[in-house]
Length: 330
Image (cartoon, rainbow, N blue to C red):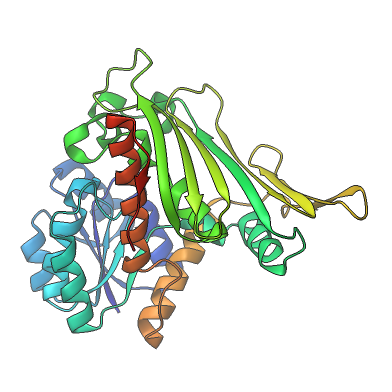
């Protein structure tokens, strides 16, 4: 296959290198920044274009879009019109503009689509999903998760003020920047209601929200809490699920899944593989996408899932503006 990677920043370069390791020999890079383009040409040995029409003229089989979110849908729509399968980094977009057009084109051409969701391939997330589906917790009544990290530490080699995370017009802000809406929906089912308080509370030089507290109601009746921020000085990512028959916990820094069964009155611990390389989950998601393209299979997070996630995120943003609970249509 010929694969084009649009956006050769941090995530784009990761995808390029993983494609090379996975044996893809025909890779095209695309970035408007000449410095980024020269790096992937020289260090990764791939063809590079500064203009997207030149990429499409080369007739790639699939396009990986790793640009700021505000460009995701316009680029994806152009690619879809030429018949390219789509790997779009999260989130699908920062608005609903042209989303209906993209859905129509994807359906008309029967394209394979995938929205970036790398932690679904992390061993601890796979274990949690299996435990939740086993029913051992009984009915899950509530859950909570958090993601937080100091924004200037995300990419210390670049000025955080110039990244899309810091800029509203590019689709930044902690609500759009997190994976947690996707993962909570994957674990608990689709979201029906959302309430959110979000604001810029820190002294970071950004024009987006840096802190958010979100309450969700899922179709099952369970309620969930998501805490998100750009301000914690130590990386935090953790999940907890509270069921009638037990509790399930995972913390990134502990590197283990913990399961409590009420009948047994004790915790069972599932440790992550020793020396687990986080890039393995990125490589696994790319392998999954390529396999689905080659075999015509639906991906684990296709564009329809991406639309539902975007609905939940934008409902939370609207709730933060007007202080009302928002119902989410499906």
